[in-house]
Amino acid sequence: MSRAPITKAGSERLRSELDRLKSTERPRIIAAIAEARAHGDLKENAEYHAAREQQSFVEGRIAELEAALSTAEVIDVSRLNPGNKVVFGAIVDLADEESGAEVTYQIVGDLEADIKMRLIAVSSPIARALIGKCEGDSFEFTAPNGVKRYEIVCVRYE
Image 1 (spheres, rainbow, N blue to C red):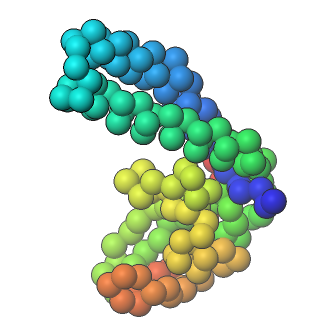
Image 2 (cartoon, rainbow, N blue to C red; image 1 turned 60 degrees about the vertical axis):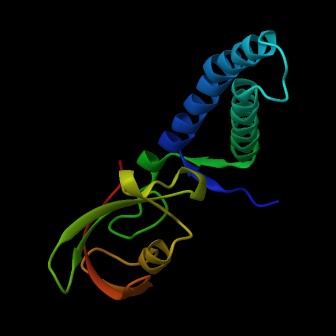
């Protein structure tokens, strides 16, 4: 079984989510199910069915997080020192060669990826194109809206 990489910060975020689900959400949902049961007939009880559906979702997420964290290889990015070369955990400033717009991404594990937070999965097309490149290099990758060309402005590890 291969061990999926995850950053130390990502591991802490996921463990925090797991603790919240177990200590807060699970008991809240159990109480909601008990209250809905007290209302009588379960066949036509929308509150009961909604609470059961929520319970199913939370239990599934708990199982997913526990499985992922048990097989994850936590990598402390601050201890890496690959210089200006892009590897897992790198924070990369990019400049679009066409528009000049700049964007910053961090390459992280698949489970912790979140494009809204500018965390891109190591298995994503842009991350695969970045890995192994150095500061100052140009690269291209195929995005859903066509081929994009970027220049690597800065590579850092925090």
